[in-house]
Length: 372
Image 1 (cartoon, rainbow, N blue to C red):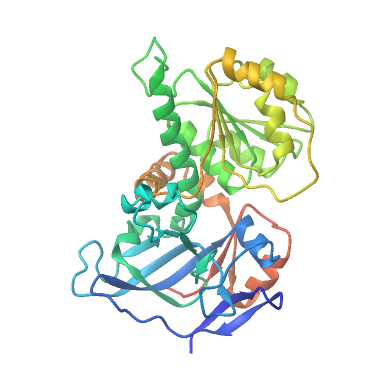
Image 2 (image 1 turned 60 degrees about the horizontal axis):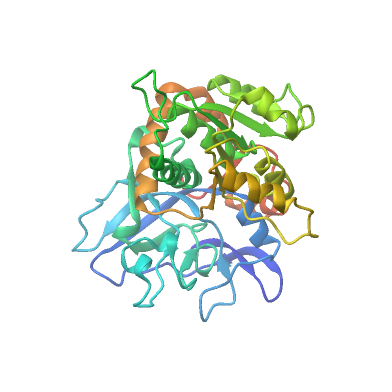
């Protein structure tokens, strides 16, 4: 019987289990051999039993939502993929409420009811097992030449969805640089909070869109993340060396903030210095901690008087996956060493439990499930 890494919320246990092989049940089902699964902060929080819900009738949840797999079988009605394709499988599944317009439109990332399910997170088993079965509509084909970095697709979708919404927001004003025909990000400043994989992938996406990119993270320079930031033409700023109030002096008008650190205290501190006509995107989900003090009068004045926009962005739809795959190809063309450097360790599934229960030692750690 196939092996899988699973969490048991009722007993607060995490271990490798014998997990029944999934079986195709629909003519549009696709069977995928899992090659790799990325490990992120969400996985570590589930392993710490902060959340994570098994499927109905199961006492455990197979973990893992950042996947890369190879198609090994397809149903008779499948048209999107073929045997041998490399695929990244989407995470969220729509709710069943007929009144949820988002889910009925295939945009379950905007689900109104909250009754969606998510593979490896909420009521559906994840990808840290040898094979999975899913409907073809959740499959995204990845070119073979991206094999070594394709597991980064899902974390990159977070930035892709956020940037797409920034463009939609900024259609309200003539945001492009008036002296060039380059992309709308040109001549504008983007600040990324956090230098983890989501932050650094976001920095690459923003840089590719033409922004002047600054990454704000704790560690003082020099450090490997600062070197990686510099290698893509962005600027690393240490929060230990430069206080928040000095950021506008260092950066200029802060046109966009991409929050990828999940620290509310830092995020709301930086929100104070968001620039005129600026957009602030929250993507992190902080744990429950003690309340923080926030100058709400200042934030409200800035939002009104400076025409600012603040929004949150979670999960991603198909368009974000497609954009992420395209951008990974672009990143490999522009910054191959930097993209490869994001993956700082690959481990067998036998080491996955210890990996989840320990503090992240690198940027992106990956569990190898099957060999090519």
